[in-house]
Length: 425
Figure 1: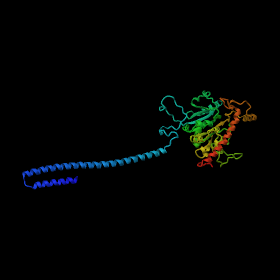
Figure 2: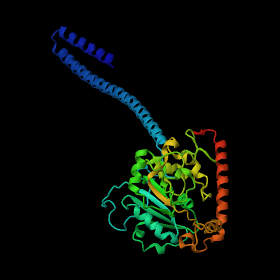
Figure 3: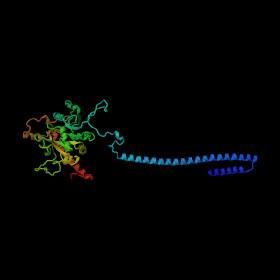
Figure 4: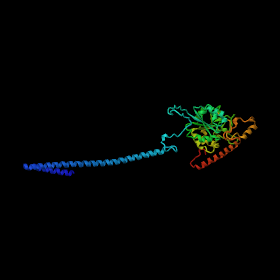
């Protein structure tokens, strides 16, 4: 186009030049002028068309550049999107959610719970939150032990403890006259043990907000026990699993390590140099060290989470569990498990499930320990098909059977788990 424009322009200039050099003939001048006008018009048309073609060419180039740039931008955006999706996917893969909650947005998941009662009306957001450091006291109870249980519960400040009662005899309404009954949680199941209740109602996610779990028997006396002082001691000493010592003058002591020492706040081991089951300075196994009895254990939150998983669903007496509690001590069991001497209790040793042990009663009578008719504290009133005294021996037999079965399960689990390393081997 530019070549054509230059050619036409050259032709016009030549004609103009010729017009200027010819004689001044009017007719010829008119003809020359007409030719000049025609050439100028043609030149304008050519320049106009050339400009249009140039504009189209530029537009095409701009359009081509824009398309290329658009493709490049699309590719960049696609790559950025892919990177974001990859990053999101990586973040989502690393984002842990409790099993079963995967379809839910993370912020709505409420994983833990507690036993705190809530009002039926009013806005929960307006409720003034008094943040107390709370622990849980859970006790299996029968109506015959109502007085002793009430004394235990009244020792535990309501601002610092939530109380749960496991009613193994099915009697609940007769507890309504004690002043703290309405604030306690009552769970009833006929002829079930403390560990049966604990496995089903003290799941770690439910009790996760409580600092310590007191899982106590009902036949305890707490005249010399103060819960808040006890908590301060075990926190200071770093005890993840503990129990109050037993007053040897009044208690049924089954294991020497639970007996109260007269000096100091805590002991973590026992020394026994004679007889069976000797314990020396370098003894590292329960019940010489790293051991508490199951009548009044106290667990930290983390220790309970571990212990709950070890409780067998069908072994309701939990015999043998005490020898393995040290594995849940969150560290060295010889340091993190102990008996508190300065806050001590009395263990009366009253059999409640299955009735009174007839052999024990006869032995006590023969020795003169009990010359009177057994009191109500020694008997279990039959409620809704509960066991009678003749079944006590069957309960003991079942307990020993569970002990052997638990040991076998532990041994089997150790063999099968090739990745597990015994820290106390």
